[in-house]
Image (cartoon, rainbow, N blue to C red; front, side, top):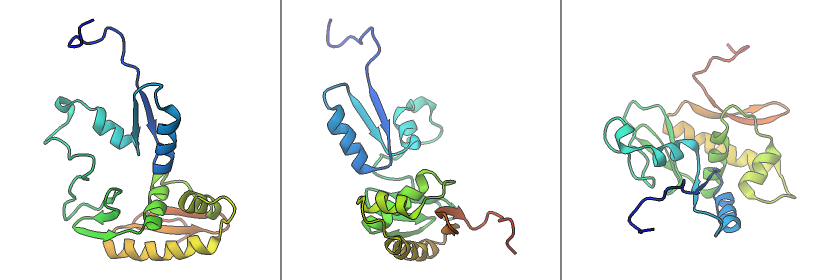
Length: 176
């Protein structure tokens, strides 16, 4: 077959979606040589990569390393993993590695309540320690940064269960 001709059979491609950089590295190492591999952090990133340019409305999307610019009225919280920053509208804050990993973890499943042990394992990557005080200290710093951003997102404690990322604008049953 001539190299310029397209293949008659479908192109084998493995696609893995995981927010964890460590998990993407592990998958790349384990699946090396099996087939071409596309590793993405979330489904939105996958959609941007596979969408045909003619199907995208408006101007072409920003490069994956650059998140789309937020407008002054954009209430969305944007996490830039490449620069380790969080942005809401025109405001931006730097994140430490631990803050970035915690915020990324909480945003992967926004309606899930994460236990302190799950968050500790996801952020610190050590199975045996699982210290609640580590998570609480990190959450306190991250809440302050979210407040500085002016975003409606915050981290709330669910008594006896753990933590979740919520929107302060959402009405809560039983709250005044």
